[in-house]
Image 1: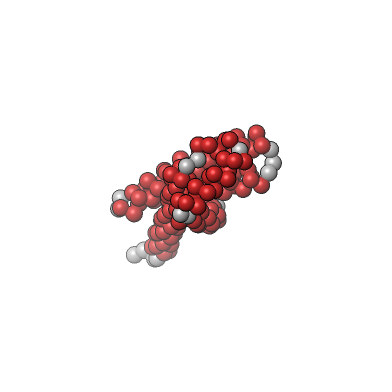
Image 2 (image 1 turned 90 degrees about the horizontal axis):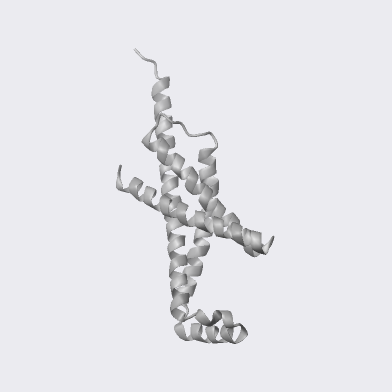
Length: 173
């Protein structure tokens, strides 16, 4: 196993765990809040990330055990869910960078206004908001790296399969 494959296994495990927790919390929010775009969109985005991570596990299995073929729909599923995950990851990266670039004095003003409107925001501090931005940026980078590595592995698997098929079709002496 090379470094890229090991990194892919680690990122895929982290992405599977984080997206699984996100799917569970989104389903819980859906059951409480009902049908609303604020609940459905995160559920769909985290669901795509979760499905992509599961399909990536099949890629890993095929890479380690080539005798176990991929289903016909796995490569296209990896691509489709990967593109959706990339869109979600870029949004997370944008949000994370945006939050981290906001000056503390602006955050203090925003927090003061929020506390005046509702007491529930009393726990917010600029540090909490910055940590949230850093975590969102981390999730975006993690999902991006995971998708890129899964696309690379899919390409290598397909090259290996086409190479094996071309060897099988050559006349044997």
